Length: 89
Image (cartoon, rainbow, N blue to C red; front, side):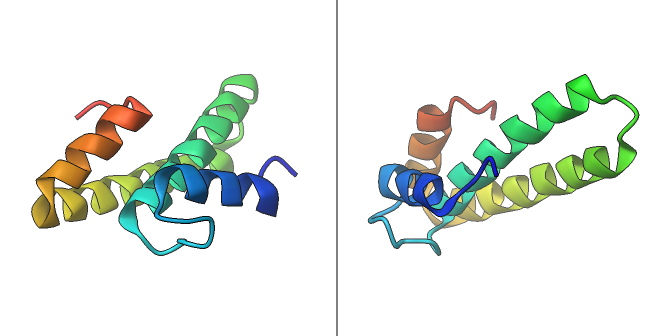
């Protein structure tokens, strides 16, 4: 599988407070970004896979909602995670 527990811990350790910090907005946004990148490549290769395309759109919406939440709560954390991940605002 493309996303095993070791990869998740690496993502959480890099963007969260620790390897077990699965609840912070930054770690969830980073995990969603990793999954979005993977699904984007899949949809490019399989353009008729509409189910995966729908899942990708829903995942982008979840990430956008978390980014909006973080922007409302703490603008510095929002700017930091956007810069680290290289996301468009």
